[in-house]
Structures are given as C-alpha cells and as structure tokens.
Image 1: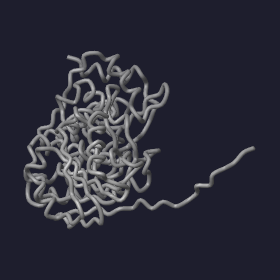
Image 2 (image 1 turned 180 degrees about the vertical axis):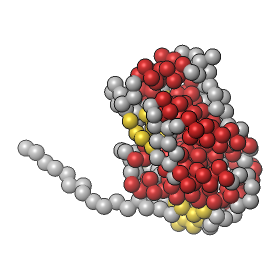
Image 3 (image 1 turned 90 degrees about the horizontal axis):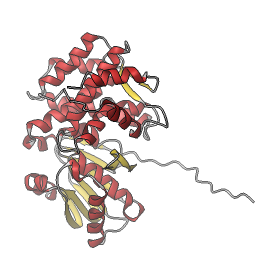
Length: 348
C-alpha cells in the first residue's frame, strides 16, 4: 500500500527591507536580542529605545568569526530556554554578519522555528549578509557548512550604525559591494569607480544599490539552485583562505577580496575577462586598502578544500567567474591543471 501526504501550498515569506533611521519595532510577546559586547556598548541603548514588547531579554556572545560554531549556537539556545521563549517570541539579530548568521540559525532551530529580525550594524552585513535568509555556522571542514534557509520577518538597515565602524570593517563591506557590481551591474561598477564611498551621501546610495541587487537575485532563486550562486563570486577561494587561517587573520570581506583576485586570474586565463578589466577591479579594491595577496603553502591541499564548498558536487568543483564586468558565469567545466596553475601564482 502506498499513501501520500499532499503538502502543496503557497508560502509567502516576503518581507520588507527598511533603509534609513531605525523604525520602532512592536511585538506582542517576548523579544530576545542577540548581540556582542562591542555592539551592545555602542548601540544597544538606541535599539532598546525603539522596541515595544512585553518582555525584552539580551543574549550576548563573543565577537568574532572563530566563535561562529555549534557550541555558540547551543549557548544561544540555552539562553532562549532560560528566558522561556515560545513560538510567538521574536529573536532580533543585532550585529554584523556573524551575529546575523547565528541569530537566523538559532531562530530556525528553536521550537522548530520562530520569527527573527535582522538589524545589521556593519557595512558587510547591511549590503549582503542580512538579506536572503542564509543562516549557519562554520566547522572544521569549512565555512557555513551547517545551516538553514530561514528568512527574517524584516531587515532594518540604519546607516548611522556605521559611524563607529573601524576602517578594516568598512573595507570588508566594500568588497561585497564590488562583488555585486562586477557580477550583475556594469553601470554600478562604473559609478563606484567615479565615487568615493567615504564622501557625502555616496555610501547610502551604494547600500541601496547593493541591497536592491541582492533582493532581486534572491527573489529569482531563494534556495541557491542557480542564479543566486553567482553571489559567491570570490567566496570559493575566500572560504578556503578563511578556513586555512582559522578565521583569525582576515575579515570575511577581506578574504572575499583576495578570492576575487584569484577568480579574476582564472577568468582572465580562460578568456572570460580582459587584463584591463582585471586591473580595474583590483584598483577599486586597493582604494579601500583591502588585502589582495595570500601565500598558498600547499597547492594540492588548497585545491582539495574546494570539494567541501557547498556549490560543488561529487567530483566537480563549481567556480563563479566574472564575464568581464557586469556579467557572470557559473561553471564546473574548468581544467584542473589550469586552476592549480593559478594557485601556484600565489605561492611564495
């Protein structure tokens, strides 16, 4: 005998992305705010003055990519149980990409899933990590290999939080903005070349353009079955760098910047990108003092790490390569010897 369960239904996970001064958040139930000590010291008072709820709790975790793991998730879940949150409660992820990823993942697990809101406080999280519902943590095998797609109820992007952002964090965020432009928007890239994001209202314009680009891609491919994978330009190489350095040497955006340089070298070798275009991307990244070199000690080990990338399958590696500036190619038809030849360029 064969039985079936008919689960055909329409699920609307649409949500607003508010860009501008932080709006008042009203919630008819308990609210837990997940943050880290640095952000709490700088901005928690601003958030608390904009939350209206029956009860509000603060969950604080250590700051840094090296703490984005299952042990920290268990700590977060324990605190949620301590505060007796229920399925009608709300988790607010208040911080950078690490906090957003862990807050989203913890909320997807607690009571099999509760609502959460993203309030990103770094440039990288505002233009990329907070939008799209990708949540997760790292393990010894690689970056974000444990996680879930769990869309937030809303994203609140307040550029005023960036006034306290260190220069390195700013540059790391710019790397993700450049990534969006190279893969999807040539005119945006030209605008970035002509405008310094540290001057006037240029940053607010760039945030809006980057978020709009990401939102349109997520609408077309929420679960990263095709087009959305293009947003991982620079990440295939960058994630290996992060894992090799134990998430302690480079910020995520810095690793992505180096990864874009590596990907551009491969794209140029394959005839997808010209040397002039490769130099233009490099010059734009250099403007924001991003690290663009990395010493690969073991080419074979670095290459084998590609197979742990979430986009790769079985014996093939998927690479995200620019087709010039403003277009992108997702391919697993890349010659192994060519890839290793590119990697050898980054040996001492």
